View 1 (cartoon, helix red, strand yellow):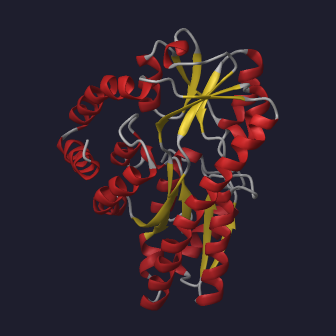
View 2 (tube, rainbow, N blue to C red):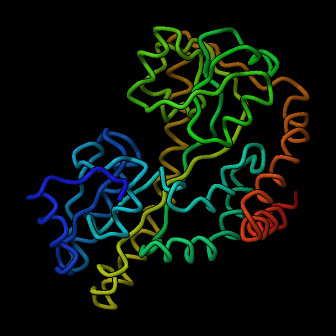
Length: 322
């Protein structure tokens, strides 16, 4: 068991919810109540409470002793009944197909790719003892730096914080050095020069770290998404009517959360520019060049992971025509 163990009393209390279909414990990786992610989860909690006999107690990130990378496992093991998980790829690595750099380049492609992957994702989460209810997506991950950047060539020799091995490969492809850090370590690391940039969204990490990042190269590297999941035993213990209503509510509020993030992305871009951040549009030719260079990586990545990954990649590429 890799996740940090809850205190004895909290563990007993949290585990007990699995046997009580009308009282769930939920958790989100996000620790800031004002984010679109938490607001979306709160809407789900409120609507479920109003429309069903299910009561959900939502805990913000770091309020339970569950590591971010272990949220899906904690749900599958019944430590909590429900969660929003951004860091699910360690438990369900197949889902990382959707996060490969340069594979999905816009909102339309994302929608098609996710639809193609959804049946496979449902099955993959089920193997972890988890029901995939839905999810939401962050805006595109772009490049924020402490140094002037006008093209991908300017990444050479610089240390960039990434959140996945796939993002790390992208940075290495253009001569940079990828570094993995927790979000809480980013501000101090930027101040001390441990890192010189991050891949994030204006409405994501840059919302908190913008004062350390005077440059934003508006180049879409990839997308990040969160899954809204439930413990399979807890879900099965619900009445069919409550199950249906829970699924319907998540199916509505997931896209609403995505829309809220996209709206906030534009607001944050404007705010950050007004505060002095230089927003630099992608240089002509960078997108085509990066796609050409990264395409072989998609194939090798899938081949290294096995036939299931190759099939998932093929399904996504067929869906988006790439």
